Image 1: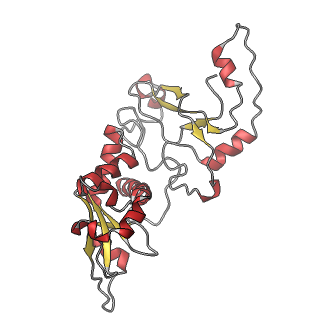
Image 2: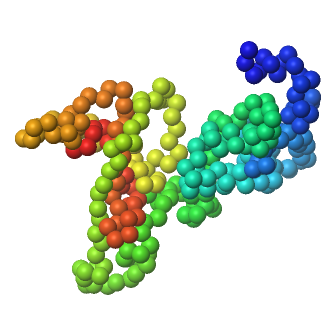
Length: 273
């Protein structure tokens, strides 16, 4: 018997704070303090803001706009991004922590909003980048690599230095780049690739997907032959990987400070070669 069947048969065994209200005018609020059921009264006065904007004014991010039932506080979204970046916490582990915070005795009875957390976190990151890079009150869309920053210490004419045309050839205004890759960042083929939505296609460090795919199709990839006996890198590069869409990731970075160059990171379709 799964958890849902147990809940349906033994409603009286559920603690009061884990029972949703009997009426329908409530939201499931996900916060750093746990998952809560809160009754919400929306304003329907003439000229009032749409419902989702009312939630945003209350520092709540709705999981969807079609059928409002779950919302995340700004605090929990920022906390999840920090945990994911600094501690490497996955979305599954982070929401599992929230369920334990809500009820350390019955965590399995806490509503599962893991998928909603992932979807909202993607949107939240994009909105933060748009705001930080000055696109909050602009109608134009970002161009290639405009949602991320390059190395602030390296000389960038018009950004952190203003040399004359004759001074650009001087060594102090030159920049040195290195290229490296991770050949263990493998990715399986998507089960439903048509359902994927690319929110930052080419606007960050990764190159534009459509242009990169067109480049790969138009490039002749010949099998490299090694003169060395059983050269591991060459053998791995020529190995067929039908189940994998990507076999690694590579990028260009500043040689002095290690900062990645915007719109320069690509996916690999072969092994190390």
